[in-house]
Image 1 (cartoon, rainbow, N blue to C red):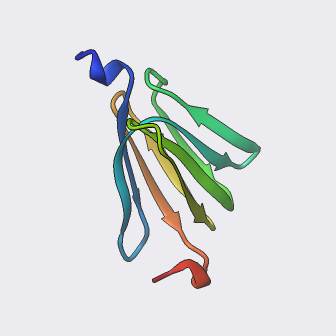
Image 2 (tube, rainbow, N blue to C red):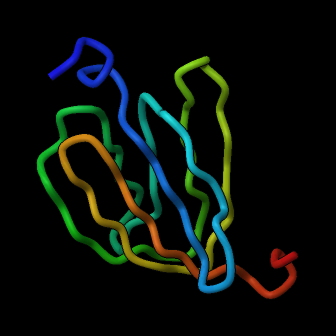
Length: 93
């Protein structure tokens, strides 16, 4: 494992119609069914459903970004996270 991979991982967020973001991140918070979940590098593998809310993530250059979702699913692996999300109709472009 490279030193960089121990402090960051890949995030990919897709909707049914397009790629919403693909970034190297240091952390992400997602709206789980029972509240927000925080995921950091080294998290154990996880598959879970997501609720309506914001995906909040911090990029490796320390920028915080947000994506509003209507729900979805998330797959966490050792070095990457994939989120397949539905957007509110007014958020689609």
